[in-house]
Length: 339
Image (cartoon, rainbow, N blue to C red; front, side):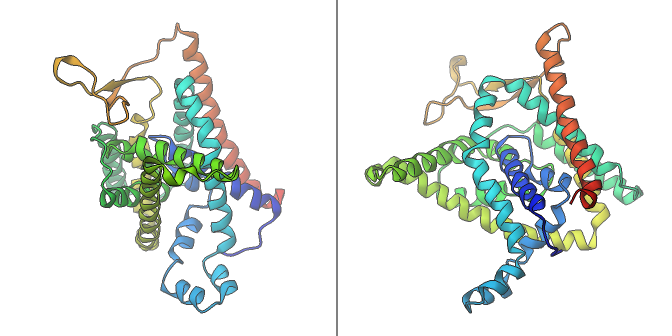
């Protein structure tokens, strides 16, 4: 797993981290797909698996260099750096485009997922009865998840910790969108919008020498929620990676088949042409959460109108999404020659 990295490799790892962070933020898109398609999924899982008792023994005995080498530190740190930068940059840009050009964003991601199905499927030559069954099961689960209805928001700290553990599955399981799961659990706005914005605002104030947030109970509460969510995510990331590395070692072909089916099933979640349906209360009024946000009930999907110029732009973005994956595939094949 450990090999010397060129500057281009390091830069690309940070960019892959940026892409993973952005993908994790968008409901219906999985950061794990980025890892799978970027060709570093197994290294990602095995590196996380190295965060174990032996690693902590090295750390607490002061053998920092050995600890860093043991956990594949350069790989993990560059990737996490990219993800962190993404949460305060790329994801902010994504938020803007989701508000103003939602159709094109969904189209690009739809194209990228189509491309990733081709990318994973093209070299998979192990279609037998068991792998075919596994793919059908993955497909069924993927479709079922995309039609579930969201719950109400809940800021109980134990539930927030569980949200962190569950949502991080999007980073380790390609096709399972962590942010979409947060919508289903009712906590997407609280954990991926409000909390990130609160942290962003706090850093901005600290940078200016303003410590007034200490007296802001609402801000402190949101930051506490974010801290618990982060702890839950870290716990989930490490525990899931141990389970997944075990599964990948013993049932690699079946796991790949399930992932292929799952990603195909998740296409329904990112179908670009959809209208948001909001929950209705008595007397047909739209329900609002504690911050006055409309509560999403589900999506109504429809077929595109080819007479609308917007549809052709959306199709262009789908092709662009597929092209990104084909470029990644080309880079993967020619990586040694380019280095």
